[in-house]
Length: 132
Picture 1: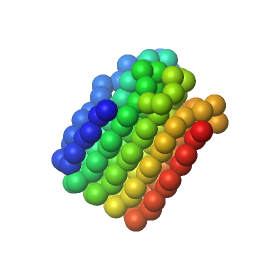
Picture 2 (picture 1 turned 90 degrees about the horizontal axis):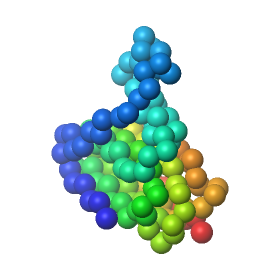
Picture 3 (picture 1 turned 135 degrees about the horizontal axis):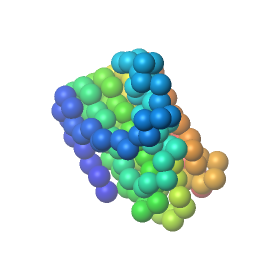
């Protein structure tokens, strides 16, 4: 289980990106987060890649060994709960929260949720998702 607390910049994962597939002239502050999300869900590697920019953001992850998840929380007081440790299925997911005081709570994973991308933009939003 991973638990990340607050901080201006908690963790940044370096991505193994194939340069010949990216038009670097089009990468800017507006497109880089989408690029990171797409790269993480397309890669065959398992692991967690988390970017938190803001204060008092929280990510609590309980993952199986075959989970590839990319998370970005931009803003303050955002919370993510992601639990899929009860299954051994391969899962690729990307979650982005832009705004303040958002809560995303995902439990379980299945064939419908594999490859899922969740993008929350705004303030005071709550998403509860159950995959059984």
